[in-house]
Image (tube, rainbow, N blue to C red; front, top):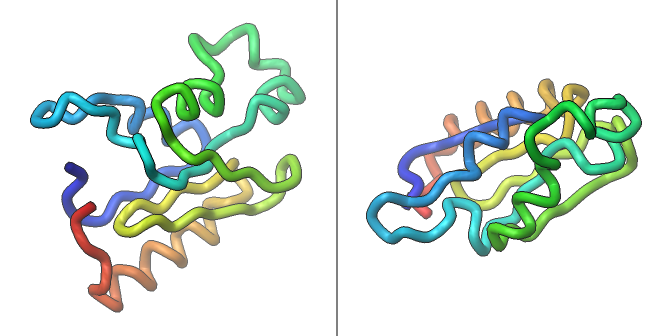
Length: 109
C-alpha cells in the first residue's frame, strides 16, 4: 500500500484521502492519523471555504483520528506514516521524520 516514509502536516494530510490503485481501499483505512481538526477549521473561519472538513473525511475513510488541544503541536506516527495536526506540528513532525529515517526501522505498511 504505502511504500517508504511519508509525512504530512495540517491540510497536507488531505493528500492521503485517496484510494490505493491496487487494493481499491482508502490509504488511511485502519491507520492512526491526525490533521487539522474540525474545531480548528471552524476557529480559523475556513470551514465554509474548504471543499470538505479533513477530520470528518479521514474518519469516513476509516482512519483512526487522534487529536490534541486546538492549535497545539501533535504528531501521530503509525508505521511509515507520520502526520501532524496543524501548522504548530511542523517541527515535531520533521523531527519524527528524521528520527525514522535515521533508524531505518520504518516499514512498508
